[in-house]
Amino acid sequence: MIGCDEQADQLDALREEVAQLRRALVSHELVDQAIGVVIAAAGLRPQQGWDVLKHVSQHTNTKMREVARCLVEWPSTGRLPEAIRRALGAAVRQVRAADGPSDVVEVRSATP
Image (cartoon, rainbow, N blue to C red; front, side, top):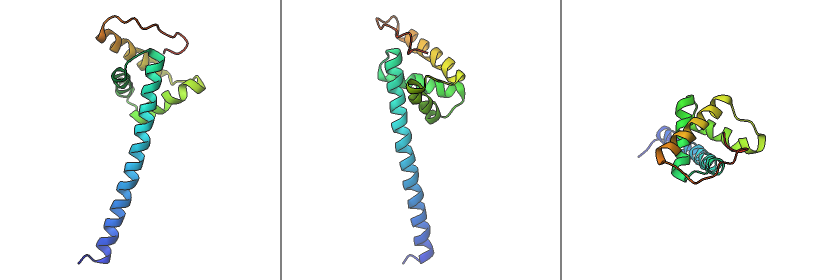
């Protein structure tokens, strides 16, 4: 039989796990939205959008969810931190170069 202390510990552990899962869902949603922003702004495919986001996070030493938050806010605020802006431009150029020439037309006002 499980004692009261063990039950309380298990309950605390389950509450923490639920909280972590909820945070993960919010982060995942934000990352998906950021990928959509990158796809729309740079005319990329979804996998390329993910690659760009990952590149920006790694090359700016910024957590993915923070990069995603900045990118999601970018269209409405018009502001993007300089380090993220530079890394975003480099990442877009890199994924385009890796895939060869494209017939996608750049949107000058929306591209980094």
